[in-house]
Image 1 (cartoon, rainbow, N blue to C red):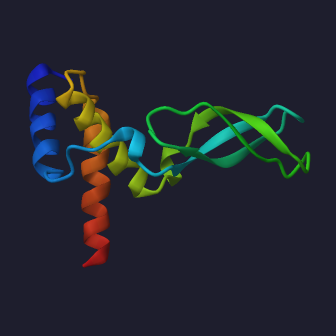
Image 2 (image 1 turned 120 degrees about the horizontal axis):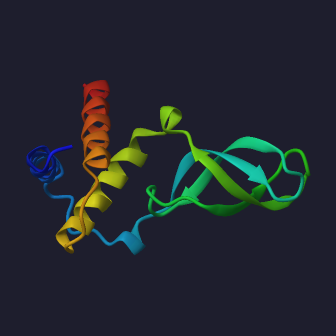
Image 3 (image 1 turned 135 degrees about the vertical axis):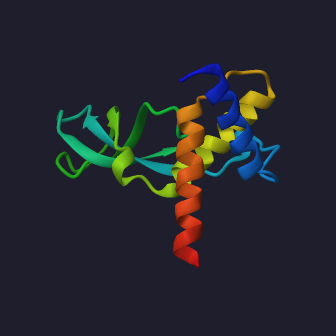
Length: 126
């Protein structure tokens, strides 16, 4: 992606999510991101919903394993964006804008996904 395209994506995202900033990333309620995760107890890989504050960062979490029948640590293998709730993408885009306001380089793909999902959600409500 060119620098010019990246700049226009940032401008579009700031305009689209106006009023959403400033946000406190630590104060965000946890949301659930669908992931493929491997159970550390039995090694079974299953689809789980990982509770995260920042949907851009996924990793290890504790959750009940249906195979083991106990609460075990799960390690994320991959994020399943195809079945993710639109809220996940919108939250990630808002966090990218928050980081950009603090001088970090935002990810234009995350911003575009947030705009797309927020637009789709608005269309479904009407």
